[in-house]
Length: 112
Image 1 (tube, rainbow, N blue to C red):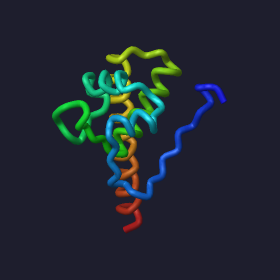
Image 2 (image 1 turned 180 degrees about the horizontal axis):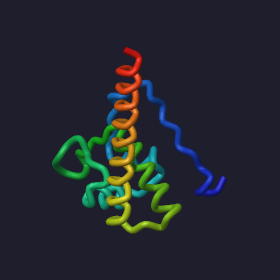
Image 3 (image 1 turned 90 degrees about the vertical axis):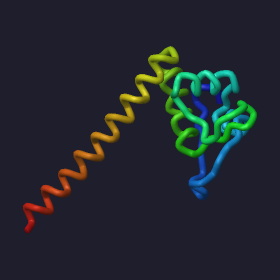
């Protein structure tokens, strides 16, 4: 398999799982320097502050890292563009959830 064909699988058995920088890099098949840049641009955030070696990341950070990798690979985005794109994608997802919630509420009110 070449690099573009690889798929990363994450087991969701422990949703409280945390990853060190090294583990995050291994799971994401990415260099630590890139992760550090993503943190500096606010793309992902460690759970802990302090020295880079002490950083811990959660499962949502790993998921966001995967999205960032796909966007950069597929769209060739730079880091500021990557950060903005991910924020916009989060906004779209939140708006879709809100629309779904409001649609359920309208259907519920119409049934009464």
